[in-house]
Length: 88
Image 1 (cartoon, one colour):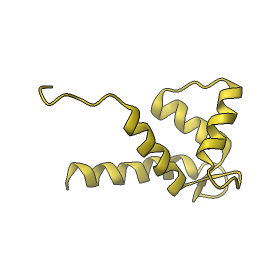
Image 2 (cartoon, helix red, strand yellow):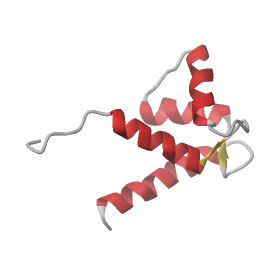
Image 3 (cartoon, rainbow, N blue to C red):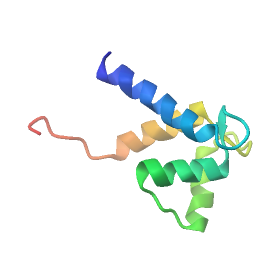
Image 4 (cartoon, rainbow, N blue to C red):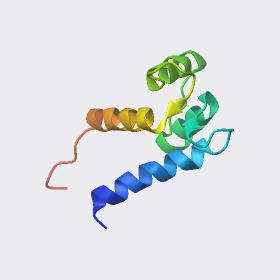
């Protein structure tokens, strides 16, 4: 399996692991999204920042984060990370 394909599967697994905790296994609730960010990205957002972050994750404003919205967020986060140099 290629590294890219493995990374895509890993994103699905992380989402599914957190989404199944509350109700709908196909979406992240506000609490599930917060738990995911805290455990996977080591982010400890303040309550006000958590609200803003959730609103930006929940692009369609329906109160939950779909897998598509999660992947869009993951791609955006990837774009702002410093790139490893080829010599590393």
